[in-house]
Amino acid sequence: MAGRYSGVVKSWNGSKGYGFLSSPQITGDVMFLRSHLPADAKEVRGKFLEGKTVNFDLTTGPDGRAQGANMQITAAEGDFVAGEVKSYSERHGYGFIMSSSLKGEVRFNRTDLDALLPGVDLKGELVICKVLLMPDGKLRAEKIMFQSSKIANRLKAGGMMGFGKGGGKGGFGQMDYGMDGNGFGKGGFGKGGFGQGYGMMDYGMDGNGFGKGGFGKGGFGKGGFGDDGRDQGQGAQGIVIAYNSGKGYGFLKCGKADSDVYFKSQDAYQEGTIVSFMLKINKDGKPSAINLQPGISSGQTYTGTVKTFLDTKGYGFISVPGQPSDVYFNKDLAPAALQNGSLVGKSVRFTVQVSADGKARAEQGAQFY
Image (cartoon, rainbow, N blue to C red):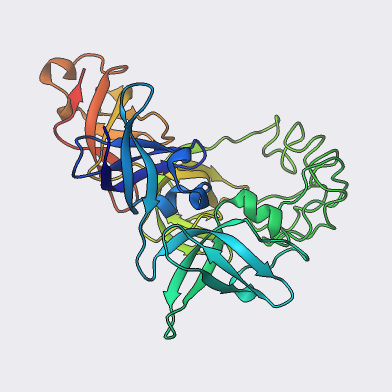
């Protein structure tokens, strides 16, 4: 299978390094790996890549299935693009980005970025940015973000730097979200953990320390995340209703929560994006989302397993591999011969409809087997 094709990215799991795309030239979805992406897009997350138009070669993977390779991400004026910082002068306050999606270099200013650590060298760092064409024909970047939180934490002032020995007594200190600690000690999560620094956090931590070794025994303040009272949360799905790219946080609408759900992420989320996550209720009763990933989308077909079924109520839930949130189904979707029997454990192939609050529901035409 050789040749050049065009398609659209349907899903991308940045943490696991694989995704799927569709093309009108090919029957069925095509898998691709991180190694198939351009070098300047290796660390992008799903919210950037999903929906992007790409050109690619078609190859055969070790399992005999079609795979995309040598991918090129296309871009139009005003789009966010992935790129690599080619040069940066802290003294002069500007630098240049190169992107495989564009011809020519893109200038950016120091003020387009959040506060950086003094003396940091940005050359070679991977970013995403919106690109504008200026009246003089030159390209100008704005809304620059690092491709992953790992990169951002290494370079930004107040980021989660240094997970080494020590940690001391002061917690995070200068983190941007309501910490009043006295700094990081000698850098990290060692003995003493966060110490007294989580006291003023707005989302329900009262901050007497992590106990020995960070997240171990002793928990998040009094109880919380440690062995004595760990709350793993529940799988959920929702829709992004707001995201502040400058601060790196936003809010979701979720049917499992009575109020909007707070989340923090360095990934660029667009309003209306469907995401799945673990929903946690903090000590002050406010909901928050962690471990965000691409959610189950309307009109897409999935294969899962019936997890629960309540015969007396006439509905159940389907679990989908890789998704923390289950999909609702009505028993009328099952063949009549199975409706009065045990559906739990049955495999099912189905198409999804997502409601305004992000809940996923299986549509008519589901196949149980």
